[in-house]
Each structure stands twice: as C-alpha cells, then as structure tokens.
Length: 191
Ligand code: IMP
Image (tube, rainbow, N blue to C red; front, side, top):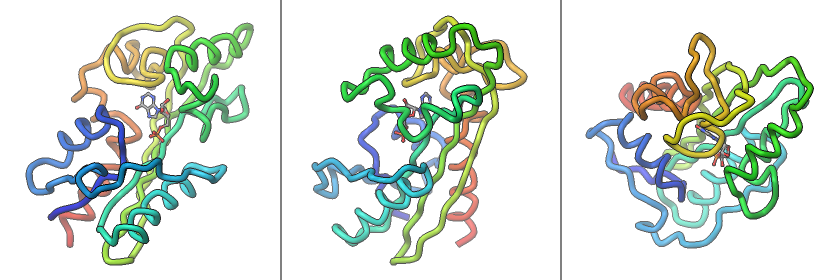
C-alpha cells in the first residue's frame, strides 16, 4: 500500500519506516510536490494532527497520515504540550527548548511528564485517529545524543536512561509514537 506520511522530519520518517516494515511504501511530502509549510493552527494535538492530514487530502487528493505529538509536564499544567516544537521561540531549537524547560522546572519536586502522539489517517476521504502515550519523568540534566527534540531530558517509566541514551529500536518499542503507529499498523494490516 502506498501512503504519504505528512512530515518533514527525517528522524520521524526513519523511525516510522522502520516500524511499518516493507509492506507499506511511504511517500514523502516532497515526492507529492508539497513544499509549503502545512498549517497547524489549533490548540490541541488531536486537532493539529487532523488538520495536517485534511490539508494533504484536500489539496493533493492523496491517501496519507499525519502525526502530531508533544511533551506534557504535570507541574507546568501540561506545557509545553502543543507548543513543544517552539517552546523557547520560533527558532524551534531543541537545546533552547530543553534549557527553558529545565529553567521552568527549577525548584519543582514533581517531574512527572508524558509524551503523547495522535495520528490521523485519511483513506479515500475517511478519517480515523490513533493515540499513543508514554509516562515518565524529566531528567534535570541532558543525557545522551540519539534522536531529536526532548529525548535527552525524558526518562520513560521503569527505566533509568533517557530516550536519547536508547537505540532507535528500544525507543520505538516504548515511545508514544511507536505505540500510536503500532495501532495504525494493526489497522492497516486488517484492511
Ligand atoms: P511533532 O508534532 O511530532 O512534530 O512534535 C512536536 C515537538 O514535540 C517536536 O518538535 C519535539 O520537540 C517534541 N517531540 C515529539 N516527539 C518527540 C520525541 O519522540 N522525542 C523528543 N521530542 C519529541
């Protein structure tokens, strides 16, 4: 089955290609001729995920899926949440974002956090969503170098290493995205 994955993030594409396996051939946005920024105008992760898939379906008429994800920290009332990518500003810099997060968490004892991911699949105009989450806590020092975003400061529950200290495969088995994509995969296989 041929599907477009509506992302410009090469790390994600690699993670998902790995997870979905050979039975699905993923097309990139560039391959379908979509070079523009896809709008993300909503305040929640499910709505932004829907908006991205809808944009591709309405403008390009191609079966696709889009994901939206973010980090929610309990003591910060769910921030950075839907604003995770640009928490510290429009430069969308992972180090700046983590530095601001650690600064905002200084003096807080509760470091509980979770990553969440919502995927919207559109097949011939029919929409369906799949969710995944992983509970954990924030590490007050950055550790590890794998992957992207907040990986160096997130320790998944039941582990003592951060996501950035895990291999891509270890992370995919645990992660919010891995869990949501596993649900997507099971659904696609059942068709
Ligand atoms: P997106 O909506 O999936 O692009 O994610 C938005 C932002 O959330 C990313 O730019 C990262 O800052 C953060 N994020 C989402 N998933 C992950 C992850 O697996 N590891 C680290 N950061 C993530």
